[in-house]
Image: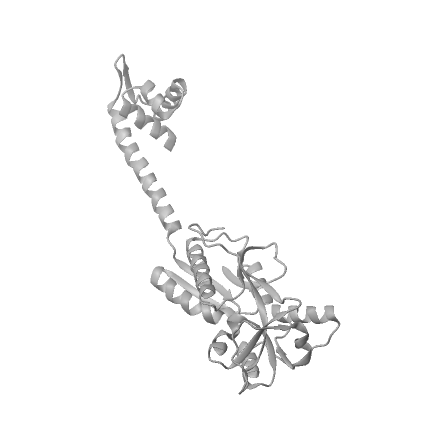
Length: 319
C-alpha cells in the first residue's frame, strides 16, 4: 500500500466511478482499475461494490477511505510544516568581514537581524582578505566580504563594487581642507614613508604590484596587521598609508586626514560577497545575505563606500 494508491482510492470514492476518477486524475482507466485491484489483493478484501450506476465502498472500503483521508491530510500537513521550517530563518550564521568595512557593516547588521529575525544568531568575525578567502573556501563561515583578484573554485561570488585606493596623510594646520575628490599620481607612493599591512592584505598586494611594474622601491616605514595602528600612525603624521574609503571615512569627516585618489594608473580593487560552494545557503543565511547587500547599498548611498557599485538592487536579490 502506498500514498498514490490511497489517493486513487479516495478519488474513486469521491467521484463515484472509476471512469470519472480516471479523468480527474489524468490516468488511463485500465491502469487505475489495476491499482485498485492490487490494493484489494494486498488487503485480501473487496473495497468497492461495482454496479451499472458506478461504485460504492464496501464496509471495509469505508474504513480504508476514512483512514486514507487522514493519512493524506497528515502527509500534506507534514510537507507544509517541513517547507515552512525550511523557509523560516533560524539558527547560527557565521560571517567574516574585513576590518575596513566591518566597523560600518557589523553594528547595522546585528541590529537589523535581531529586529527582523530573532531566531537567527550572528557570529561576526574580522579578518584580512587572504584569511577571509581561506575561511570561505574551507566552509568555516557561511558568508564573507573580501577583496580578491582571483576567485576560488570552492566559493560562490557576488560582485558588490569596485573601489579606488587613496593615499592618506595627516591633515596639517594651514592646509586646504580635503574635499575627498582630489587625485594624486601613483609616483607619490615612492616619496613618502608608508605604513602597510603584512603579506595577507589585498591593498599591500596592489601597492607592491605597481611598484614592481614601475621598477621603484617603497619607503616602507612600518608594517602591522592592526587597522587601528595603521590609522594611528597616519593620524600622528609618522607615516602615510594606502586605504580604501571606508577605512578613512570617519577621520576625513572629522578633518583629521587628507585623502587623494591614486591615479596613473588607477589603483582599484574588486569587493565580493562570497559563500562556500559546497554549502547551499539555508533560510537564515539567505536572510542575512540580503541584509548585508542592503547595508552595502546604503553605505554607498551615504558616501562611506566609494567607487562603482556592481550589484544591482532588484526585487529578487538572489543570484
